[in-house]
Image (cartoon, rainbow, N blue to C red; front, side, top):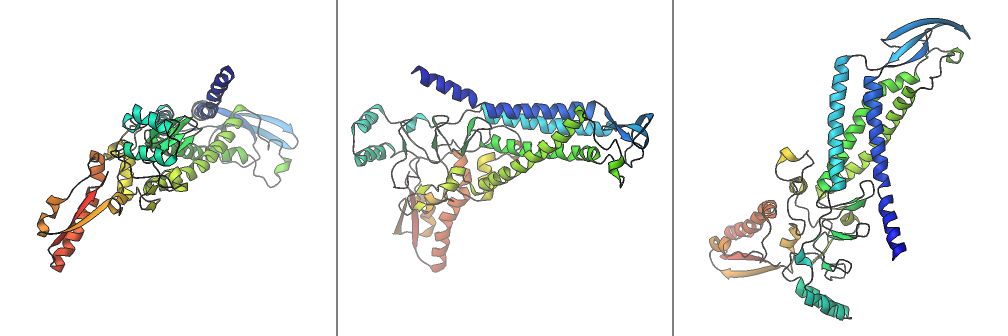
Length: 410
């Protein structure tokens, strides 16, 4: 037991290494940009015979060395005070939002299923005693009868986690790294040392967006100073200039590496952010992209898609003023999700014809025994209206007196 406990402690410590690396890179980028570029005024020598477009010269001195008549000491920094203020304000805004969303992604605990998805003590004991899978599935079906579950395994069995000993809600998966079942699990991210799921998916998207803007702003504003370092001498015979090489200073290191690091992270984050924007538009998780959820009428990757607008609201909420803030505004409870396939599922759909006027169809429609949450009712409001009015309009046009009653089973 002791070696196992020590091993787990070592794994937990090592899991924070990627987070510590990102924190160090961000701290260095802050120092390099604010202190070295915007606050401190660093200089380097340049041959005055070289043609370099720059506004600031200081401390002219003479030397005769390898064909150079004299040199000047060139100041490389942001010269305008107004420009400095604008750069620092925009930089700190993007920096604060980036750190805020990154911290929320790291320290927001993954949402886990509620107690109603756990087996009762009697069912759990009976489930453990049974050896036949058929008998175990019968126990699970009986326990899941009143639960809002519409997906199954590929073999049409109830999704059950032996590790957590609970029936998995829709879109819930067990994370081996966190050792818990995570609601609407997308993936486990080592760069945040946390599972990305229902409770922090919005924070993760904002983290990607603000880190992208942060890297873009840093790379764009540092680019002109990066170019100055590499274009000190523009003479045709540059090899004859003894000052063509850049002095080995701290300024050289910070400006060069700040641009390279910002550009590298921007390119890598751009692809990841674009991919997750596509996932939000389709209302899919990364797991569902590679393994489609199985409904009663078969697997379907678009089973939870309600349209781009409603998919966006499901993640970011109804109030647009909170969309860009790392504040939890996602709709629903993470245990059940609105889906079009619930309405279209032939095994969950009961259609009966009655000889009554078409006007009474709205009053006779039955709803699930377990009502959807308020947010889900808002998301499905348009769809329910379509289901009710579609057949009604067709019957009115055809002159038929029959109407359709839709019954949804939980």
